[in-house]
Image (tube, rainbow, N blue to C red; front, side, top):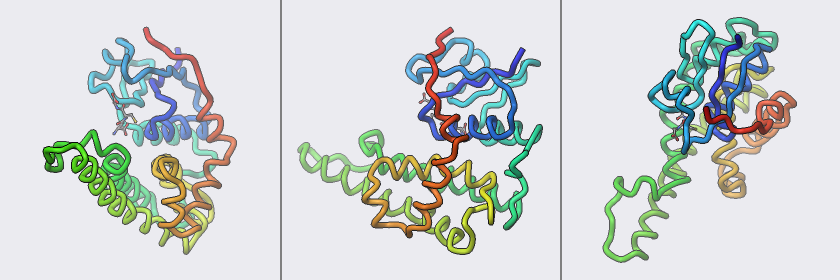
Length: 221
Ligand SMILES: N[C@@H](CCC(=O)N[C@@H](CS)C(=O)NCC(=O)O)C(=O)O
């Protein structure tokens, strides 16, 4: 029996988990789920209901994408994702933490301001509500740029966050940079140094990323 990974193709957390599993060459059964209709077997294993979730043959459940990456790479790390040539593993973990806590909340508010209406005062007429949403989104776009600046500073010193070669932080963070860029690439192009976009494009051009993004049928049991 193989470990089972519940995943959602477009989720950046699930992307990085699938990428690490492929890089490690660990075999798992991938089950693509619909977030609106999560399979009962997944919810029974992990009631919190987020993807990715990895269920091991002994029943152990790994519920965080970073832990799934570390689980896979602990078994086999042929590309040295856990051995950055620049900085330490702790450095990379701190960067990944900043991505999740200092960047992702701003990314979500920039992309989906309507989901956060309770965070800004609602005006009576609909046109001013639209204006407030736009301002709210813009503020969060600017705040999201702080993290991208942090990445850009590192990328001026070396071609990857891990140094000469990409390592854990590169693969864990780039799905989120992809997400903000895909929302409005021309806006990002004007706001960040070219090194950041080149770094992202190089990682996303890799054959192992294409493999991690392969479409599969939906699982619903
Ligand atoms: N901290 C979690 C976050 C995972 C997460 O938030 N995944 C989103 C999809 S990108 C999700 O499953 N959301 C639940 C939903 O939309 O119902 C991890 O690293 O795995």
